[in-house]
Structure formats: C-alpha cells, structure tokens
Length: 105
Image (cartoon, rainbow, N blue to C red; front, side, top):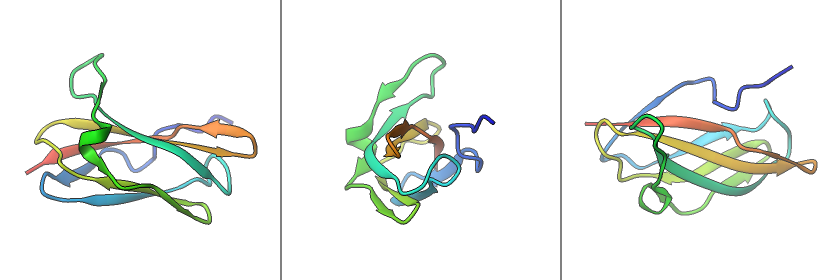
C-alpha cells in the first residue's frame, strides 16, 4: 500500500500577517518520529523551487507522541505558494511528507 507524501488536507491558506505553527501526525507513515529537519520552498513558478527556509520559518520543530509541530510559518507573500517539507526518522527509516501553504491578504 502506497501512502502519499502530501498531507490529505491540501493547500493551506495563510494570511500574510499570520504566524502559524502547523501540526502533522506521523501515523500515516510511522510512529515515534524524530524530526531531523523542516524546509520551506517557494514553488509558485512551474519547475522552480526556491529555498526560503530562513525567510518563512522561525524557531524549531517539536514532537509529542506521534504529533509533529513545525517551526512558525511567517512572512509570506500574497499569491505565492510554499512547499513545507518535514524530514523525520522512525525505526531506522526516513520519511519526508509535505504540505502546501498559499499566502493571502
């Protein structure tokens, strides 16, 4: 059985003035995760992926049980689409699920 890497909730709208830490359950992939990294990319333009981690992510990630909390997502630009990927390990395996965020007024 194949599990999609993209979270099932789809693209998340976020106001450009908002600062949000998103939560992700690791249970579709594995249990007791250890987060090894969170990255953010601007993927608005087709076939272009610009690393904007230092601009739109602030702080660190956290884990409680199987729930991962991302760093704060902030400083978005209107009509830009961001790919947020979370790298974590569990049981010797590495997983990299992702979700998309669209900047809105």
